[in-house]
Length: 489
Ligand SMILES: Cc1cc2nc3c(=O)[nH]c(=O)nc-3n(C[C@H](O)[C@H](O)[C@H](O)COP(=O)(O)O)c2cc1C
Picture (cartoon, rainbow, N blue to C red):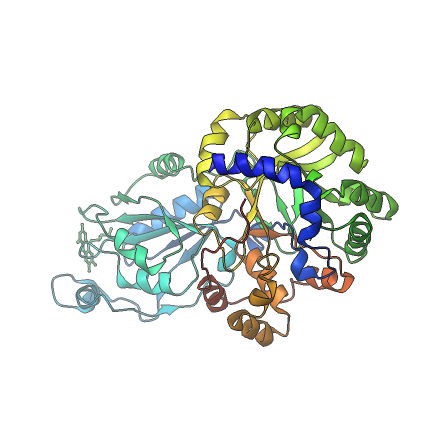
């Protein structure tokens, strides 16, 4: 991967800005597509809780006690899976051929659940508790898992039992949630103490961070339309990408965004338009502290002389500090460049730092070499390239994910915006396909920054907070994934 990157790095440098401009100079929102960001939740933040949910089923109260300990320790929301038809003592008498025995003998049994979780999209980690029934999770757990879209979420199972271990009870559930990542579960005996639960949560890195504020890192606040970064700064969850915009287009687009209430702007050295972004910000009436600017430095000369590259960005933007600086993609001297950004954070020149086009393998190699955990990773994400394995991996590190090419990128936007599944969902909500795609991103916890030079599109792209995609609609879009990358990064 790195070799390919190094090769392209050279090539791209030579072709540079010309190539960028060739890609798209049109005024069409859909074809410009730069990056976008977004995060996690809404009611989680509004209730002051974390983005963790403790969900459990308990017929006789043993599992319930432990679930309550976990929720208390994590300051997490708790949800009891309540059967529509409650289990009587007779139902539970095992080896009698009673109701529970019959259900466990029938893998297709799905006992109905009373009530439901309203905003499942706000949670990215689910602790799932249940008693062991004949070596398995009770079938009502299957009902629960089939009732929601768990893609991109992490599930940590735990169980109580008379004597059996957790065995394969959790593994047998994996096929019900194909796009979730499951952690290894744990079995507890009746009467397990709160301290033991705390120790287990610690071992699984599920502990909330030390302060209340940091425990909300990565949680999307859909009311404020922001996410708290691990750097302590808040970032809007939707904004404008400026990739391929000429100076004038860029100036006008940023102005249109700010006038329409947008506050997040994504640019890069390689886009050649940092100065135009800065000029539009300085010319606007919006206070600087309300605006969040992301820029990037590029492999090659900039990574070799990162201090100068950072200073150049500060000079070109000329807006005091930079809210977020990213490395544009992996390449020679990337650790050196990142360390220079770390120093700029210490010096107060940059608030937050992150990476662009870094995937699991690259992150595993890179992170141990640096001191500040990136606050943001910006990658290609769209319905045909969903990165379902990469997104939860990044989010579980406390890093916010932002997607570029939300509409599939040049040459693919009409295909994506015209996709019959997306189109029919848009029609059902009285919105556009573009809005559906952006909203799908937000509900996956991905920040969006669609590119556009069309003020109408810019306004439309911000208008994604008055409708919710249902779990079924999310599932339909998730099913469109083709793992089809549209750019080489
Ligand atoms: C139908 C049924 C089957 C059970 N099967 C097992 C089992 O296979 N192994 C075991 O150790 N305990 C088994 N148990 C005991 C429960 O797993 C144990 O009492 C559990 O802690 C109850 O949790 P709860 O109070 O949250 O419902 C079974 C209980 C019932 C009702």
